[in-house]
Image 1 (cartoon, rainbow, N blue to C red):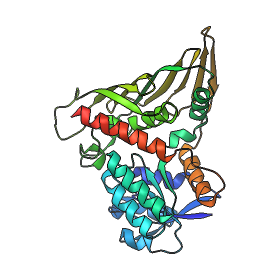
Image 2: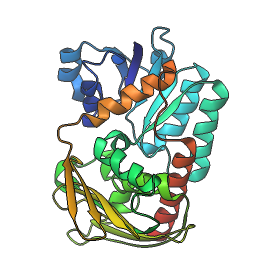
Image 3: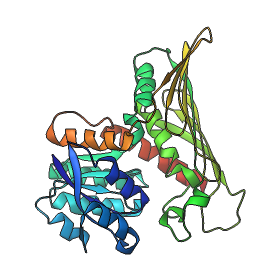
Length: 319
């Protein structure tokens, strides 16, 4: 059993902790948060030992690993310090907002001999596994085009003053927090993004300090494959990722990724349902398996670097 400390107890940190409450591979026993008063009920409910400082948590010899559910700008320094104390790290995506910072974080962990995993939880979902395997195995032939869209009502959900509404933490609208999942799925099978064209704008609001409502990205991969990603923080929850091959199409769809769809050359459609899958818990358990040597985490360093490089290109083009 891997013993973990959670850093950041906002709604996502709480969700990650709850996702492994019944796990036999990893559990959370302690944590640190800058806003303990906002998580008092959760701390009382779970019995987590709360530290006053991040470094005190790292000094706990009973803690094997750290789960970072913190603002993106804090990740690199937190990873470097965790590496000093020989703690394995599971960090929420994106690991950083530039390729240079991503390299620094990964190298710090590797040099310290500790495992590091980036929380692309959708990679663990059976629907996503099926789609990516279909692409890798050549089921739909050469990939000509890929499209993805993800939306969530972030404008209504996030409270004023939340770091998730800050442009310095979430540049390019919903691309940083949501579109990065689509990028990850794409680069895992298509490799490096060569070029991007971006349109990111506000439609429902005119406050320059908060995020763009809509972001649209045209991509060209070094392989020649073309692509599109769209994100919105102003509409209802939606998710779709489609790969168009010369002999068929595969798609993952629905906010919970609950459907895998295969369309053959004759336009015959097969739908496989994968409902109510705990992808957050599955991702953390694969992280634990990586630490113990029982399995490998599905997101490689190369994947992380490729998605980070593409995200940086999108952020720069959106300015």
